[in-house]
Amino acid sequence: MRARLVGKEFRLRSAWARSPERNGTVAWFGKGSKSRRPTADRQAHREDLAHLEQFAGTRQGVEAFLEPRTTVTHTTVLLIAHDGEWTRRRVDSPETARRWAHGLSIPFYDVQLVGYPQRMRDFNARKREAAG
Image 1: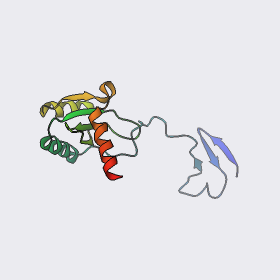
Image 2: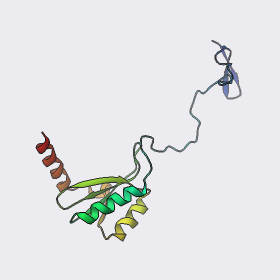
Image 3: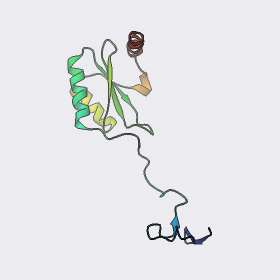
Image 4: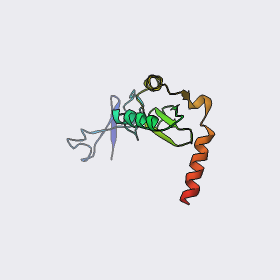
């Protein structure tokens, strides 16, 4: 198969490359200036905030921890109760999470600054021991 450069694209001379759906071109590189958004995740929904509100309303000593956006997940809020029980849900933005926690009078922390509380790790250890 031979190719020739036409503008910024290579035109292929094979029958496969000349098919109507291929239009004789091959993409050598990505489309360029696409914003890099998390791909293995979904957007936050109202049900996520409803779950967080239900969790905060039925547990004592709940604190909110903001987890930053990564290449795989969107920004999340982790709620941790006094006994270490926790839940995590997506939020639209850090500012949305702050306003939501402030509206419910829940202490709000950035996990990058304060880390995860020991009670959460203790709760996870207790669950592992009970399961296994």
